[in-house]
Image (cartoon, rainbow, N blue to C red):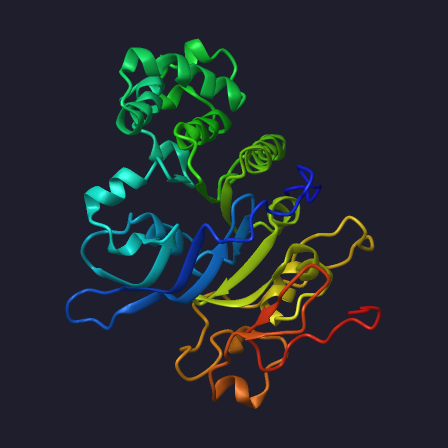
Length: 349
């Protein structure tokens, strides 16, 4: 289990202006003769420089598809993407493949979930890192190699000179993940998307990688989107949290407010399913029943109703809107629910 200890000192973002504005992002997948499947359904959020925004939810809630749509990495056929992804005044969804390729890696970079499948197995690590520098900064491989070495050293890979000559299968899982981070940082992007960067890593390596990402945000004012199902990662790294279910945001709040008082039953269920160090000995966990496949269409109901711990009649008859709530101690709060979890009696807000 990931520790919830904060990895870096937190601070307010340096700028109140959003670097990235995502509005009504929708992604439909479909094949000929079949009804399209909506994986992302009207998602909107902002990310400011120096801010870490979390996209949280179970597998299948639309987190990774959201990131792939932002990066322009979805397949060219079989999907339809709509909405706007405004990056410093430019809608990334309207860029041509070549224009997006110029942006990707230089201005916006991504750390993928599975480093073994993301790295080329037949190309030495050094060439994979230097090609990013060659492509976007116009340097030769000879000029880029010393920078590649510095990047590997920066992310904590021991003996970087030797590692540059090795292939991905010769590295441990933690080293491969660090190599992906090094590649993402090669051009000092202003926006970094991390898609489950600590999956399948042991707790010690997880903590080191989270510390590295936290230092990046703090020291270089990089905007970070953290995609995860691990609320321990959220507690230690994120400033603002967006909880997704069925392709829609069901709750948005600042980290401290979300953990102190979850209002959506899904958020509350995710938190109650985590073992607590201060819990009674032998206390049973209370997981969310069912799976993400057990849902209703958002067009006529609340998708979470079949799994909800406190449904009411309206939940299966109407669609809840994402509405602004009374602000918490740290900032704005938004909720999509007809029957939210009651505030705790000792909650002074």
